[in-house]
Image (tube, rainbow, N blue to C red; front, side, top):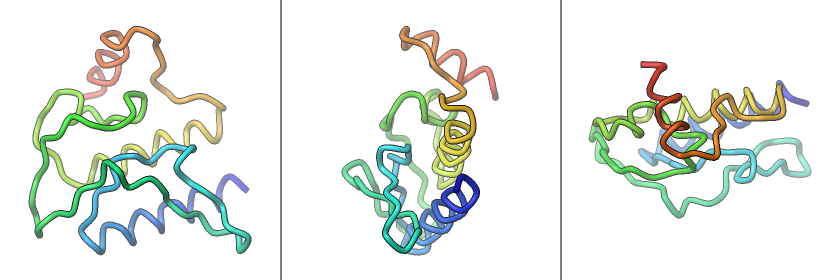
Length: 115
């Protein structure tokens, strides 16, 4: 189930990218598995429609799933949602996200240390 769900989630992300949409909210709570076994990404409230190779600088998303570029408020592209997919898969396998701390500053430092 883990590999098929992660593969399906990756396919869903690729589909949103083909429409130039950055979901900004990939996490287990926002991925539903349909009766057909395919993942559906939900909650596009933070999503952004891009124009071509446009870059973002928004500081948004669930802290545990934010890419280092978002945390450091650098310009970024779709790579931040591929990062979130990696966090998503890590959590599916281990039962917890790789970066977890009740102290937000410590959490952000931990994520930024991966750069």
